[in-house]
Length: 251
Image (cartoon, rainbow, N blue to C red):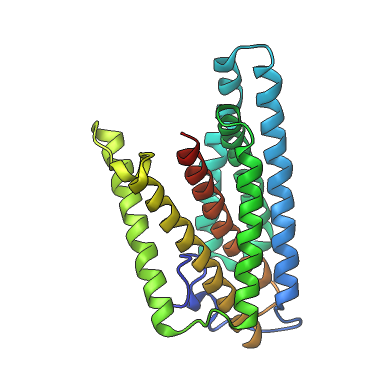
């Protein structure tokens, strides 16, 4: 269990035929940056569409204008994530498409959140970048050592959080019940969000370690796109959890 990220599992990098160029850390970082740029571009488009319609004073119309892009981006992103997970060779095509789809969704969500809590998106973006930089520095410097026990603990905690979210979504979809500390704004709710943000940050360290070991093992060049895609999944999760945490603090 090398990584808490479900798409960055060790067997994805095992038994791969290596011909030509090999995977590198720098190449993976470059492709991750490209995916982030694509997400920002499409996210900015959705944001601007919402702002243009909302400027007329009709918020319902503004929400209706971006809803197809938000929900479409989420659904298409999920499909592309599944395809990429099981067809790593296609990652050079599916990973950029995933970033574009997620950008549409995140742009709409961010626009709505920023209208309700002005400035919250800039804070979440800066915190996401900051956490990414700190975790990378901590991993590179050896401050955080990735051991088997560390991996197992992060993976188990990530699985527990994922199961909790699934149960909460099922309860909210079919009943009027919801798990309170996921959504409440009190000390317990904020503490829970802090815990999940910390867990997402630790998953970044596991991702760095898995990619680092894959490059040393000589994985093929196209796996750079797969590694970048996996990092993108964790960063999207981290950003969304930071938005949730900041919104609880604002409320």
